[in-house]
Length: 227
Length: 389
Image (cartoon, rainbow over all chains, first blue to last red; front, side, top):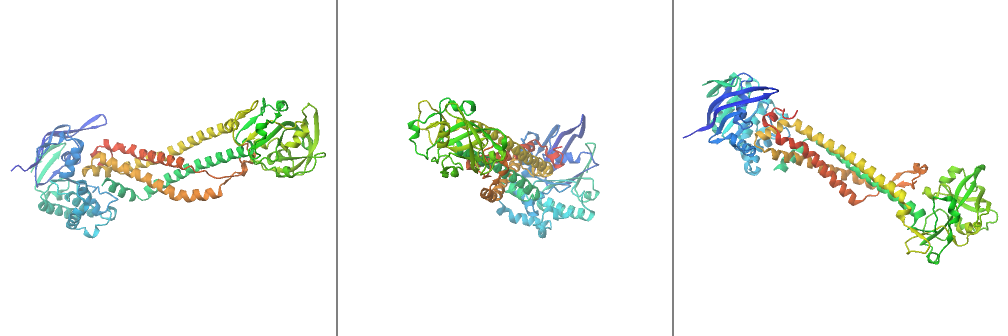
């Protein structure tokens, strides 16, 4: 059975910074399988976030092709790309990126509403996942009333609630203390096994490496190891 | 769903949204207030001129020109039957002659205006003149306006000399008694005008049955030798001033609208700038940029709607109250405008609706224009809060 989820073929990404060109990724070839739990590691500027953005369809490569299953991402229109993200990708950001005026419940509900589901049909599902991330007693609170660790749990629940094939987590533990970081990683590992969604981190946090199944090292936009 | 999101975003923005709504609402109230006050002012001033001088138009004696005082004596004629037959409530016979008044040993050129005492077409404070039944062998009863009294330092009961020429050109003079100082409202019938009974003026100038013009309630068709001057013609200077006033008020209206739109535009720009990360997050969650534009525009629309609602809520009691107390413009007694009373705003429903619709459309447009930027935003830059610099 073909369990290939994402594949990169000679992907490069060049940014224009003033009059200069900055090569963020060079000729990347890569495959991500369904259900995998992996991370991109490397120093700042090595291309981790760019790689995640390309996988998530938030950006397009300068050259090369990215495939989601058999679909070439660069051939998708902006609206189709939005649909791709809506239906298949869950994002977890370093700064959580929760919507400030929404409650925990509403933040987690939003991706489902975007997928055309009615609130009354998914209410239980939202409450269930809120309970899984241990925030049932905070469900009506706004992000500003939560701690960093709690916010990241909401972000994880928001990413998982729509049952995506792939979760992209950009430095999810960077803003958390050690205790909260470990809790988040354990939670993600547990949810990865339970929901079978592939989880891809970008991190330079060594704690993450203890939990992952596969680690890809990046430096100056190139893969330097894959283990 | 767009509506639900926009509603939540708008209502939960708190102070920022409220300030925007209140600034816009107060501007709307100011707009309506300004327009209604101008309407009220123009309507009252026009009414004053019509009631005290113009009526429904004038039948002017051949060759008579109010701007040529030296020729007034040469252009008076006997009132034709077709006009004299009109009811007293539908006509006012007026005879105008040149004269000189000598208040406090000064010479003051005046317009001596005789008016039929039975007329009820023009509303002038001449009751005392009407009631003066004594013969005029010694003193001629006269009424002057408050403005004229102030300028000449004359008071009720003063006696002074008036000089005029009669029909044969002979100069005559007699003392007049100021039997009343009336509030004329209209400077045209006040400043430099001495009011006499028409029968007295005709007697003094030997112009039996003669008139300079006849003010009528309605046009009664062409009359041989008489030129009919319509209300529009008689008030041409004032109407042109009103037109200029309208243009000025429109400029002021436009300035106020521009300020409102800039405020809304600015708020939206600030909104988008501050909410770049939120926009980026919505994009990452799979919301199409066009949908985000719709949501932000709906938020702008909601602000416009609430601004209208608050304007009605706060404006209505204010407008009702203001309509009952009016705006005291007694300080305008020194001006040459035909108004020196309390101005009451004149609310024109159509004008208000039309203004509100324009305000609504402009605010929504001002809210939509900056939001368009979102469609061009790069999601990764938006997520970093660097899509707009």
